[in-house]
Length: 118
Image (cartoon, rainbow, N blue to C red):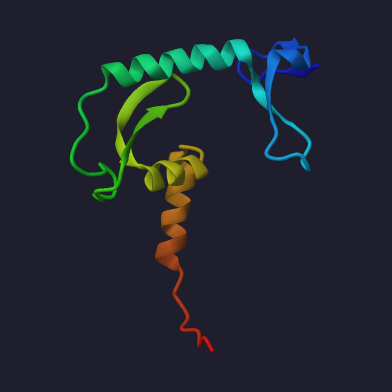
């Protein structure tokens, strides 16, 4: 039995998708049930269809790399077209403004040290 992080309902493990990277690693079970995963997938697909056309460059960093749809994970609303690197960066900070603000403060306050590499 496992509790889905989306609907909060305890369900049999068969209700969750499993992955196995290779034969030496035990399967990983997703945290959301198949029903919630389908609802999210359908919502993202609809959001993608209704999104405005892609710009020429990333709306965050300006690079010309392949663009992906950025969306709010809570309500599946379109935010913009950004490159994969920026998308991963936002995700690593949990799409959280406070976390991003602390990261900016950290970078602004720290001085870099010159290191000798041999």
